[in-house]
Image 1 (spheres, rainbow, N blue to C red):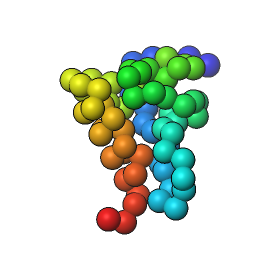
Image 2: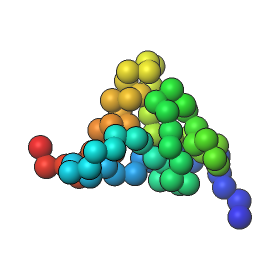
Image 3: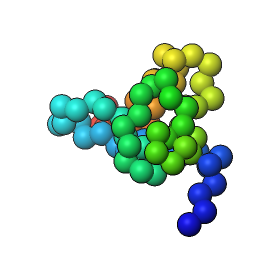
Image 4: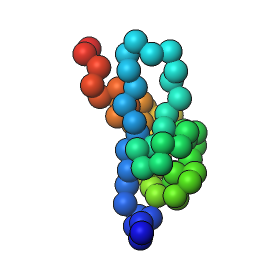
Length: 71
């Protein structure tokens, strides 16, 4: 199987009633640190990779992971 490493993947959704805030990639389900730009397993770009700061990258990924929460 050929994987385009420049395709941007998302973060798995977090459940509001859960207690784990670890972010996992949608492509491989690998845990990802906020300072990483690519999935640790398949090396595909992860949403927020182009953010200017660490804090902005974390905010983008958190917003994406909690997109189904009722606010």
